[in-house]
Amino acid sequence: MHVRHDAAVMIRAGRLVEAAWICSRDQFVGDGFPPADEEALRAAFFAGARFLFSHMVAQARANDDGSTLCQIRREFEQYEMITQLMNVPAAGNA
Image (cartoon, rainbow, N blue to C red; front, side):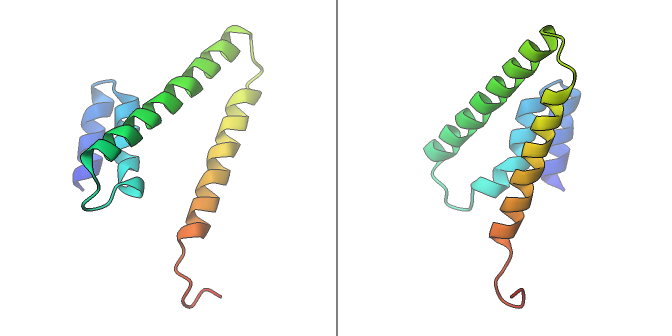
């Protein structure tokens, strides 16, 4: 798959946030999506990643007991579950 190859190249280059954007882009950007809107979404994605990383570093410096990473993992799991439920076709799933 082309997206996975592009993401793998980014990961090897140490560009983890860009790789995450490449893998996530298809959830948000469809055919005919305006390029300016795609760039705005990418900027928001990076801003969120920057915030999350800054928070994790601050917690690590404060000798966090690991609970912050657990909270982040749970939040991502909840987001994925909700997103999947919202995108399940209605037909045959009632």
